[in-house]
Length: 319
Image (cartoon, rainbow, N blue to C red; front, side):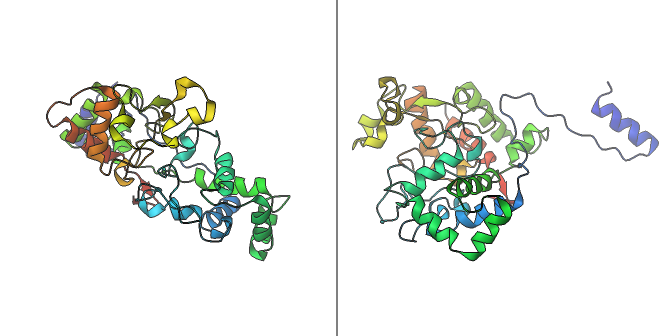
Protein backbone atom coordinates (compact mmCIF):
# COMPACT_ATOMS: atom_id res chain seq x y z
CA UNK A 1 0.00 0.00 0.00
CA UNK A 2 1.36 3.43 -0.91
CA UNK A 3 2.26 5.74 1.95
CA UNK A 4 0.45 9.01 2.58
CA UNK A 5 3.55 10.88 1.45
CA UNK A 6 3.71 9.01 -1.83
CA UNK A 7 0.00 9.57 -2.46
CA UNK A 8 0.40 13.30 -1.86
CA UNK A 9 3.48 13.46 -4.10
CA UNK A 10 1.71 11.70 -6.96
CA UNK A 11 -1.30 13.94 -6.53
CA UNK A 12 0.81 17.07 -6.76
CA UNK A 13 2.66 15.69 -9.77
CA UNK A 14 -0.53 15.33 -11.81
CA UNK A 15 -2.20 18.43 -10.40
CA UNK A 16 -4.91 16.66 -8.43
CA UNK A 17 -6.38 17.68 -5.10
CA UNK A 18 -5.79 14.79 -2.72
CA UNK A 19 -7.51 14.24 0.62
CA UNK A 20 -5.78 11.81 2.97
CA UNK A 21 -7.99 10.32 5.65
CA UNK A 22 -6.18 9.70 8.91
CA UNK A 23 -6.18 6.19 10.31
CA UNK A 24 -7.57 5.69 13.85
CA UNK A 25 -4.84 5.04 16.37
CA UNK A 26 -4.40 1.64 18.01
CA UNK A 27 -4.79 2.84 21.60
CA UNK A 28 -6.34 1.24 24.70
CA UNK A 29 -8.80 4.16 24.95
CA UNK A 30 -11.44 4.62 22.28
CA UNK A 31 -13.47 7.61 21.08
CA UNK A 32 -17.09 8.04 22.10
CA UNK A 33 -19.71 6.23 20.03
CA UNK A 34 -22.23 8.26 18.00
CA UNK A 35 -25.20 9.75 19.82
CA UNK A 36 -27.92 7.08 19.57
CA UNK A 37 -30.95 7.60 17.38
CA UNK A 38 -33.97 7.37 19.67
CA UNK A 39 -37.65 8.27 19.36
CA UNK A 40 -37.56 12.09 19.27
CA UNK A 41 -40.96 12.37 20.92
CA UNK A 42 -39.77 10.42 23.93
CA UNK A 43 -36.48 12.30 24.07
CA UNK A 44 -38.37 15.62 24.01
CA UNK A 45 -40.57 14.45 26.88
CA UNK A 46 -37.43 13.45 28.77
CA UNK A 47 -35.89 16.87 28.21
CA UNK A 48 -38.99 18.55 29.60
CA UNK A 49 -39.13 16.20 32.59
CA UNK A 50 -35.41 16.73 33.26
CA UNK A 51 -36.14 20.41 33.83
CA UNK A 52 -39.45 20.01 35.68
CA UNK A 53 -39.41 20.69 39.46
CA UNK A 54 -42.77 18.96 39.82
CA UNK A 55 -40.86 15.69 40.10
CA UNK A 56 -39.89 16.80 43.63
CA UNK A 57 -42.32 16.67 46.52
CA UNK A 58 -42.44 20.45 47.04
CA UNK A 59 -41.97 21.58 43.43
CA UNK A 60 -38.52 23.05 44.12
CA UNK A 61 -36.03 20.63 42.59
CA UNK A 62 -35.56 19.28 39.07
CA UNK A 63 -32.90 16.94 37.70
CA UNK A 64 -31.29 20.01 36.12
CA UNK A 65 -31.01 21.69 39.54
CA UNK A 66 -28.11 19.40 40.43
CA UNK A 67 -27.05 18.06 37.02
CA UNK A 68 -26.33 21.47 35.57
CA UNK A 69 -25.62 21.07 31.88
CA UNK A 70 -23.84 24.42 31.82
CA UNK A 71 -21.52 23.13 34.58
CA UNK A 72 -20.37 19.93 32.90
CA UNK A 73 -23.57 18.07 33.80
CA UNK A 74 -22.60 18.07 37.48
CA UNK A 75 -22.70 20.68 40.25
CA UNK A 76 -20.07 23.22 41.21
CA UNK A 77 -20.28 22.63 44.94
CA UNK A 78 -19.19 19.61 47.01
CA UNK A 79 -22.76 18.54 47.77
CA UNK A 80 -25.98 19.49 46.03
CA UNK A 81 -28.99 20.45 48.12
CA UNK A 82 -32.03 18.23 48.31
CA UNK A 83 -35.66 19.38 48.21
CA UNK A 84 -35.42 20.35 51.90
CA UNK A 85 -32.33 22.52 51.41
CA UNK A 86 -30.02 20.05 53.15
CA UNK A 87 -26.85 18.66 51.51
CA UNK A 88 -27.06 15.19 50.01
CA UNK A 89 -24.53 12.47 50.93
CA UNK A 90 -22.54 12.28 47.70
CA UNK A 91 -21.02 14.75 45.30
CA UNK A 92 -23.20 14.96 42.19
CA UNK A 93 -21.64 13.01 39.30
CA UNK A 94 -21.99 14.31 35.76
CA UNK A 95 -25.01 13.19 33.75
CA UNK A 96 -23.02 13.56 30.52
CA UNK A 97 -22.01 10.13 29.17
CA UNK A 98 -23.63 8.48 32.21
CA UNK A 99 -25.37 6.03 29.90
CA UNK A 100 -21.95 4.48 29.19
CA UNK A 101 -21.32 3.61 32.85
CA UNK A 102 -21.84 -0.02 33.87
CA UNK A 103 -23.68 0.99 37.06
CA UNK A 104 -25.16 4.24 38.33
CA UNK A 105 -24.32 6.24 41.49
CA UNK A 106 -20.97 6.30 43.23
CA UNK A 107 -21.78 3.07 45.06
CA UNK A 108 -23.18 1.38 41.95
CA UNK A 109 -26.48 0.60 43.65
CA UNK A 110 -28.46 0.35 40.38
CA UNK A 111 -27.67 -0.90 36.89
CA UNK A 112 -29.80 1.30 34.64
CA UNK A 113 -30.73 4.93 34.10
CA UNK A 114 -34.39 3.99 34.58
CA UNK A 115 -33.65 2.61 38.05
CA UNK A 116 -31.59 5.70 38.82
CA UNK A 117 -34.60 7.93 38.05
CA UNK A 118 -36.73 5.93 40.50
CA UNK A 119 -34.15 6.21 43.29
CA UNK A 120 -33.73 9.98 42.89
CA UNK A 121 -37.45 10.78 42.67
CA UNK A 122 -38.29 8.79 45.80
CA UNK A 123 -35.14 9.50 47.83
CA UNK A 124 -35.96 11.24 51.13
CA UNK A 125 -32.75 13.24 50.75
CA UNK A 126 -33.13 14.23 47.10
CA UNK A 127 -36.58 14.79 45.54
CA UNK A 128 -38.55 13.20 48.37
CA UNK A 129 -41.60 12.45 46.26
CA UNK A 130 -43.80 9.44 45.47
CA UNK A 131 -44.84 8.07 42.12
CA UNK A 132 -48.48 8.61 43.04
CA UNK A 133 -47.77 12.34 43.40
CA UNK A 134 -45.65 12.54 40.25
CA UNK A 135 -48.19 10.66 38.13
CA UNK A 136 -50.99 12.89 39.35
CA UNK A 137 -49.09 16.08 38.50
CA UNK A 138 -47.84 14.93 35.10
CA UNK A 139 -51.09 13.21 34.14
CA UNK A 140 -53.15 16.30 34.91
CA UNK A 141 -51.01 18.50 32.67
CA UNK A 142 -52.77 18.56 29.26
CA UNK A 143 -49.54 19.08 27.31
CA UNK A 144 -47.83 16.16 29.05
CA UNK A 145 -50.91 13.98 28.63
CA UNK A 146 -51.00 14.64 24.88
CA UNK A 147 -47.25 14.15 24.57
CA UNK A 148 -47.25 10.81 26.38
CA UNK A 149 -50.31 9.59 24.47
CA UNK A 150 -48.47 10.42 21.26
CA UNK A 151 -45.19 8.77 22.32
CA UNK A 152 -46.41 5.72 24.25
CA UNK A 153 -49.38 3.43 23.68
CA UNK A 154 -50.28 3.49 27.39
CA UNK A 155 -49.73 7.22 28.00
CA UNK A 156 -48.51 8.56 31.35
CA UNK A 157 -47.12 5.77 33.52
CA UNK A 158 -44.23 5.48 35.96
CA UNK A 159 -42.32 3.27 33.53
CA UNK A 160 -42.82 5.75 30.70
CA UNK A 161 -41.66 8.70 32.77
CA UNK A 162 -38.57 6.75 33.77
CA UNK A 163 -38.05 5.66 30.17
CA UNK A 164 -38.40 9.16 28.71
CA UNK A 165 -35.90 10.60 31.19
CA UNK A 166 -33.48 7.74 30.55
CA UNK A 167 -33.75 8.15 26.77
CA UNK A 168 -33.02 11.86 27.07
CA UNK A 169 -29.98 11.11 29.21
CA UNK A 170 -28.78 8.60 26.60
CA UNK A 171 -28.51 11.49 24.15
CA UNK A 172 -26.24 13.43 26.52
CA UNK A 173 -22.99 12.26 24.99
CA UNK A 174 -20.16 14.73 24.48
CA UNK A 175 -18.26 13.80 21.32
CA UNK A 176 -15.44 15.53 19.49
CA UNK A 177 -13.07 16.15 22.37
CA UNK A 178 -9.59 16.97 21.19
CA UNK A 179 -8.46 13.61 22.55
CA UNK A 180 -11.16 11.83 20.54
CA UNK A 181 -9.96 13.62 17.44
CA UNK A 182 -6.44 12.46 18.30
CA UNK A 183 -7.63 8.86 18.66
CA UNK A 184 -9.32 9.14 15.27
CA UNK A 185 -5.97 9.97 13.69
CA UNK A 186 -5.49 13.75 13.97
CA UNK A 187 -2.22 13.41 15.83
CA UNK A 188 -1.32 17.08 15.39
CA UNK A 189 -4.30 18.28 17.43
CA UNK A 190 -2.53 17.62 20.75
CA UNK A 191 0.52 19.56 21.87
CA UNK A 192 3.72 17.71 22.74
CA UNK A 193 3.05 18.32 26.44
CA UNK A 194 -0.46 16.88 26.17
CA UNK A 195 0.93 13.81 24.42
CA UNK A 196 3.57 13.45 27.13
CA UNK A 197 0.78 13.73 29.70
CA UNK A 198 -1.11 10.89 28.04
CA UNK A 199 2.06 8.82 28.01
CA UNK A 200 2.59 9.45 31.73
CA UNK A 201 -1.09 8.59 32.36
CA UNK A 202 -0.42 5.18 30.85
CA UNK A 203 3.03 4.64 32.35
CA UNK A 204 1.96 5.40 35.92
CA UNK A 205 -0.95 2.98 35.62
CA UNK A 206 -3.86 5.43 35.76
CA UNK A 207 -5.25 3.64 32.73
CA UNK A 208 -5.64 0.41 34.70
CA UNK A 209 -8.81 1.84 36.28
CA UNK A 210 -9.70 4.75 34.00
CA UNK A 211 -10.26 2.62 30.94
CA UNK A 212 -12.80 1.88 28.22
CA UNK A 213 -14.75 4.26 26.03
CA UNK A 214 -15.81 6.38 29.03
CA UNK A 215 -12.26 6.44 30.46
CA UNK A 216 -13.72 5.06 33.67
CA UNK A 217 -17.20 4.07 34.80
CA UNK A 218 -16.73 0.36 34.10
CA UNK A 219 -15.30 -1.05 37.33
CA UNK A 220 -15.24 -0.68 41.12
CA UNK A 221 -12.11 0.19 43.11
CA UNK A 222 -11.20 0.80 46.73
CA UNK A 223 -10.49 4.44 47.54
CA UNK A 224 -7.20 4.25 49.38
CA UNK A 225 -5.42 1.23 47.94
CA UNK A 226 -2.01 2.51 49.05
CA UNK A 227 -2.97 4.57 52.10
CA UNK A 228 -5.84 5.38 54.44
CA UNK A 229 -7.43 8.32 52.71
CA UNK A 230 -10.34 8.50 55.14
CA UNK A 231 -8.22 8.53 58.28
CA UNK A 232 -6.07 11.28 56.83
CA UNK A 233 -9.09 13.29 55.73
CA UNK A 234 -11.00 12.81 58.99
CA UNK A 235 -14.72 13.24 59.72
CA UNK A 236 -15.84 9.86 58.38
CA UNK A 237 -19.43 9.46 57.20
CA UNK A 238 -21.66 6.55 56.20
CA UNK A 239 -21.22 7.57 52.55
CA UNK A 240 -17.50 6.78 52.90
CA UNK A 241 -18.37 3.08 53.24
CA UNK A 242 -19.23 3.10 49.54
CA UNK A 243 -20.38 -0.16 48.04
CA UNK A 244 -20.37 -1.85 51.46
CA UNK A 245 -23.66 -0.04 52.13
CA UNK A 246 -25.14 -1.87 49.13
CA UNK A 247 -23.73 -5.38 49.53
CA UNK A 248 -22.75 -5.71 53.20
CA UNK A 249 -19.62 -7.45 51.97
CA UNK A 250 -16.52 -6.47 53.94
CA UNK A 251 -14.43 -6.52 50.76
CA UNK A 252 -16.65 -3.72 49.42
CA UNK A 253 -15.93 -1.32 52.28
CA UNK A 254 -14.74 2.06 50.91
CA UNK A 255 -15.15 0.76 47.35
CA UNK A 256 -16.64 3.06 44.73
CA UNK A 257 -17.36 3.11 41.03
CA UNK A 258 -14.36 4.51 39.20
CA UNK A 259 -15.63 7.79 37.70
CA UNK A 260 -15.37 8.66 34.05
CA UNK A 261 -12.66 11.20 33.27
CA UNK A 262 -14.48 12.63 30.27
CA UNK A 263 -15.06 16.36 30.80
CA UNK A 264 -13.24 16.09 34.12
CA UNK A 265 -11.70 19.54 33.71
CA UNK A 266 -15.16 21.15 33.97
CA UNK A 267 -16.69 19.06 36.77
CA UNK A 268 -14.87 20.21 39.92
CA UNK A 269 -14.96 19.52 42.84
CA UNK A 270 -13.87 15.89 42.73
CA UNK A 271 -14.42 12.51 44.42
CA UNK A 272 -17.55 11.18 46.12
CA UNK A 273 -16.96 13.63 48.98
CA UNK A 274 -16.21 16.66 46.82
CA UNK A 275 -12.99 17.13 48.77
CA UNK A 276 -10.64 18.02 45.91
CA UNK A 277 -11.36 21.55 44.67
CA UNK A 278 -9.01 21.41 41.68
CA UNK A 279 -7.93 18.89 39.10
CA UNK A 280 -4.32 19.28 40.24
CA UNK A 281 -5.30 18.32 43.79
CA UNK A 282 -7.31 15.34 42.54
CA UNK A 283 -4.31 14.02 40.60
CA UNK A 284 -2.07 14.45 43.65
CA UNK A 285 -4.51 12.46 45.79
CA UNK A 286 -4.62 9.69 43.19
CA UNK A 287 -0.82 9.47 43.13
CA UNK A 288 -0.65 9.17 46.91
CA UNK A 289 -3.59 6.93 47.78
CA UNK A 290 -4.20 4.86 44.64
CA UNK A 291 -0.69 4.50 43.22
CA UNK A 292 1.49 5.01 46.30
CA UNK A 293 3.96 6.92 44.17
CA UNK A 294 5.61 10.29 44.00
CA UNK A 295 5.30 11.74 40.50
CA UNK A 296 8.41 12.89 38.75
CA UNK A 297 8.84 16.64 38.39
CA UNK A 298 6.16 18.25 36.21
CA UNK A 299 4.30 14.95 35.67
CA UNK A 300 1.23 16.14 37.58
CA UNK A 301 1.09 19.20 35.34
CA UNK A 302 1.50 17.07 32.23
CA UNK A 303 -1.27 14.68 33.25
CA UNK A 304 -3.59 17.60 34.00
CA UNK A 305 -2.87 19.04 30.57
CA UNK A 306 -3.79 15.68 29.05
CA UNK A 307 -6.99 15.48 31.11
CA UNK A 308 -8.08 18.86 29.78
CA UNK A 309 -8.11 17.38 26.25
CA UNK A 310 -10.97 15.08 27.34
CA UNK A 311 -13.50 17.93 27.32
CA UNK A 312 -16.06 17.23 24.63
CA UNK A 313 -18.89 19.12 22.97
CA UNK A 314 -22.58 19.41 23.70
CA UNK A 315 -24.96 20.86 21.15
CA UNK A 316 -21.95 21.60 18.94
CA UNK A 317 -20.08 23.72 21.50
CA UNK A 318 -17.24 22.83 23.88
CA UNK A 319 -18.37 22.31 27.47
